[in-house]
Length: 410
Ligand SMILES: Cc1ncc(COP(=O)(O)O)c(C=O)c1O
Image 1: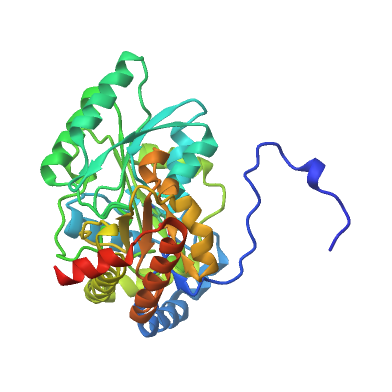
Image 2: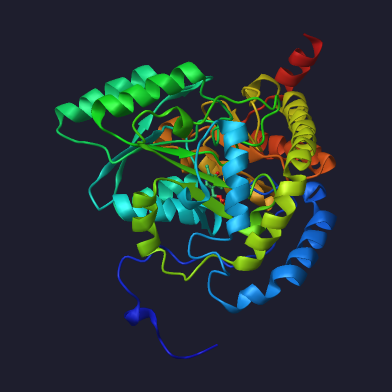
């Protein structure tokens, strides 16, 4: 342990220090982890061998032989895949590969936002997006969701209200295709409305399609980017959920004029090359057959989770069956403060995400939790939910045992 005191030298305004990692909780329902059984390890090993044997010498240069936008074969795969699955028409030169889509969030924010700005966001949204906005000093206006995703009546009202205050939001951030945390999919009709509202008020749309590959039915509406008439949509995506999050590979699709501004602030001299090369080799051959296998496995885990919640919580846990993805957004009875449930649950080995961290309106999030079901085994899901119910009963008096009995008989 060094005796030099850095504390007085630290730059002002830093976020609180990170907490030391002590391993995962026994029952790990937090974060956006994936299913270990569905990482396509053998095919990734072969892809790594093949691409490095063939092109390993290109590692001698920053950006391989592909330039700052990222490994060209991966961008070409993405161009074709996005055309096929989302209807988007983009060339490899309109795609920027990033270090996870978190870097994509940083780059888009970096070129558009300044302290005091306003953005529009779904009332329940990705914590990583919310904390970034807070840290940037940006005002996030939350729009309520229903089972069809962001409510367009509420969005229209918010835009009108902001206009009256002479505020032009910098963007409307949305996760329209398997929303985090609610798991909803915005219909094509609502997508049209959203685009029209964006056009009417001169506000671009920031479309985050992180989970769009993980849909139970395999069917999805076209991307907002594909439907846009005026080009006012920035689209981002990721391989974290379709392949593996530790790879740290995401992407941005936007006009070159915008990518050129983002490249100017992407000062990392390129995102990790080997993972891009491996994906560029793996994806054209295996992506299409891999994803349905993964989604089937995820759906089975979701069913285990919903069964376990019904069994252990009875009517005290309310949720809608999500359309895809890796999360279940659960409403517990009003007396449960999930920020206060977090610690005792963790002490019992159960890690949960308290709702307020996933919401613009903390009171809306207060009795909600987000459970990621992708990583724990079926057995761990069942055991973890039983432990969580026990802790919740001890701390908040719900679920009452009697409620479960009544439900089982009903
Ligand atoms: C909506 C959304 N966007 C972006 C990300 C960032 O993911 P990554 O950086 O792994 O691509 C996540 C991660 O969970 C997410 O849920």
